[in-house]
Image (cartoon, helix red, strand yellow):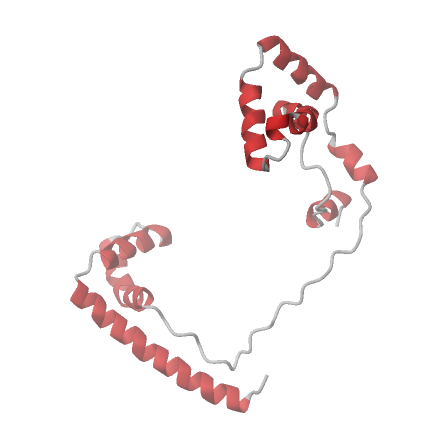
Length: 176
């Protein structure tokens, strides 16, 4: 694995993400003086942020150009970050492996409907890809009358009972 790939894999929460924007530089320079003003001495962050953005919008073009030039003078360069960055081993998360003997999850009404209606939908729309078929099925399911949706909900409830029974047996035979 190259150093760049290693760098991308490990995300340091303390690293700078990108160079400063004009507003960020303005806010950093003006935050403390604004907080010292009497009306903002005990203001919450949101109020101070709104005031900073309002003052930033009211700056003259000359002042904005000056701030922009200071931002351009100090760009954040990727290569300098990589040179200074200390690569440490990222803590590894253990992914729980799924037991192949565990019962399959219960299905939702929509999923049961889509399994039964998908072949017909594919015959009606032979050139449609998977995503387009899914959109069509979703629209068709949403437009079903309430009685027909109840049929699918009943089937889903039956499947849920099946899952709960299988899961109870599974937990007895495979204690955690």
